[in-house]
Amino acid sequence: MWDKVRECLKNYPERLSVAKILVQYGLSIRDGRIYCDKIMIPLVEISRAAGVDRRTVKNTVKMIENDPALQKLFRQIKPAGASLKEVAGYLNLGVIEITPVDARMPGILSRSADLLAKRGISIRQAIVDDPELVPEPKLTLIAEKKIPGEIVPELLKVRGIRKVSIY
Image 1 (cartoon, one colour):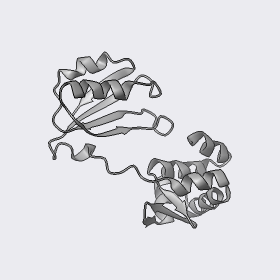
Image 2 (cartoon, rainbow, N blue to C red):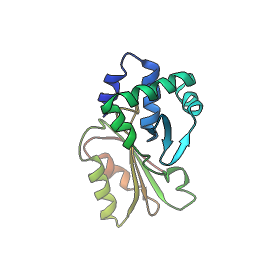
Image 3 (cartoon, helix red, strand yellow):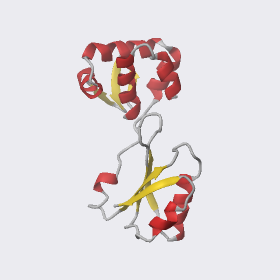
């Protein structure tokens, strides 16, 4: 997906910055406007987030709507939902943040989830950063209860895991 966006906007670095914000937050484009699901977002707010002027955002929206492939992508995209990571402590949930060696390596999520399941710990939420959008992508698992520290050495044995933090 991101390769298509990058290819279409490669000659417009500021517009590419706008598109990155749209994808990162799951913002869609319909009828010349930007939405977070059903909530309209003012162009000026996107311009602030992307560090560009409002005209650049408007031109990006027009360009996306005039490209059939981009239009289909940006019309359908939706936000992934609220992350519980920042409120996990307040809710007595456990958080594991995993930094992979290579975020494209398969099996990191499944093997990490399996280690939790073997301890009878249910995962409430899994958030995986897109390696094309985030410089240092992470896998964040929010669990139904605090995570025991002795799981860290086991997680570090999982192929592809470079670093583990528990909150």
